[in-house]
Length: 252
Image (tube, rainbow, N blue to C red):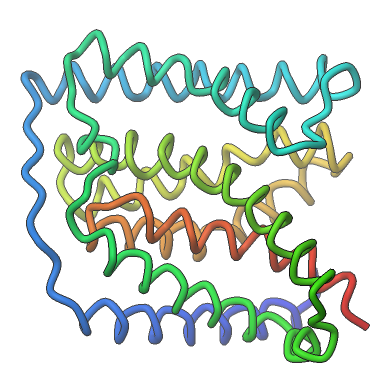
């Protein structure tokens, strides 16, 4: 990653942060009351469950990707569900509500709008080639793009429930809003270290830089959850982030 990349990336992140802040302030979000019987116990459960989920992810990446590739939406859903078993178990055992992992009707419409506004901004700010997608839209390409978007929606929703809905919510109640948000964002960014080394075959120094580059987007995802208290906005934005990285490579 050269200096030009970091300059361009920094400018893009700053623009996205500005767009996000303006978009967030356009709405008034309903308060979502979340109570924990013992937040310290829930916090420890969250850290333990997330660590187990990370271990399950790395075991899958290393041992099962060839035998059970996530090459369909159904297969991807199954793998994501299995990886989420530790947090599902923890939520049930601690008798916690769905709203404590960001699943709530409150602020849903506003969260959908916010997710698409920031997501589209991300897509068109990533590369000038993004605008060329308008020239290749046909009935067939729209169908293919919709299928790809749905595929990455499963990825985005799965990871956001884990790291923003589940982990960040508990860390915020435990350590306070700012510390909980930043800590969850750091954990999410560096969770990708193993993935980059195992799947992308990166050296540890390259993998570390890749995780550092994820931090601004991780903070942005956490910020949308922080404001809306609904998992939808950050899940849609996450979908656009993954979707964009694939589509840009195919646009000439």
